[in-house]
Length: 109
Image 1 (cartoon, helix red, strand yellow):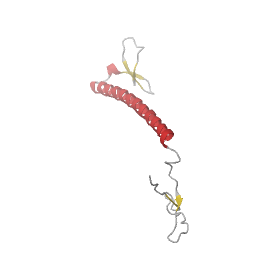
Image 2 (cartoon, helix red, strand yellow):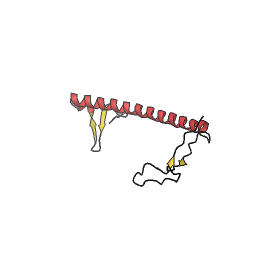
Image 3 (cartoon, helix red, strand yellow):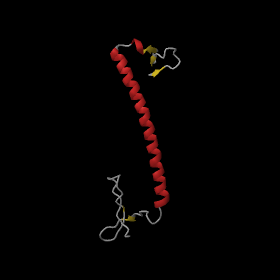
Image 4 (cartoon, one colour):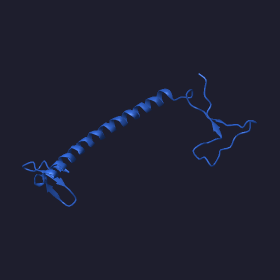
């Protein structure tokens, strides 16, 4: 859907795969639907721009955090899990999302 700027009378044109249609010849309901669709397209374009700006801001923040805060001091180093008798625990293959062979040890500040 678009307005054809090359038309001498600036007739609104509804473009489809089957051809172009003159919106001024649509029923009142059809004209209203066309206007609503045009408005929705414009709003979607504006939202798309906002999403792109937010994505770039998030990438910049992530990069800044990685550069400034991620270092050996803040890195969480998992340690091998042990049983009560001190032997290493093995990973349970029935829980693919969890590796029981390792635990995260909280660092004291």
